[in-house]
Length: 89
Picture 1 (cartoon, helix red, strand yellow):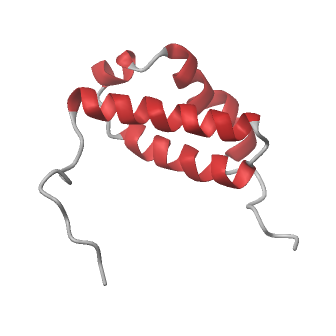
Picture 2: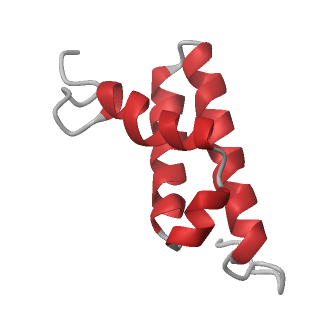
């Protein structure tokens, strides 16, 4: 049975959206530090999806350290050029 939506389940915007993006990036980084690549990949993809919805001025409010990790460093390991997970098992 699907969960009922609460009145507070509206899409995030403004400061709440920026806060959620930062939270998801930090969670992904903690998974990365713990060598949990599958969980890191999932959180990173969720963070990227939210990050892409931000305007240019909102993106500037995300701390630079988090932006760098999300856009560049993690792209090296999780980018489209990499072999997808679970392919060789």
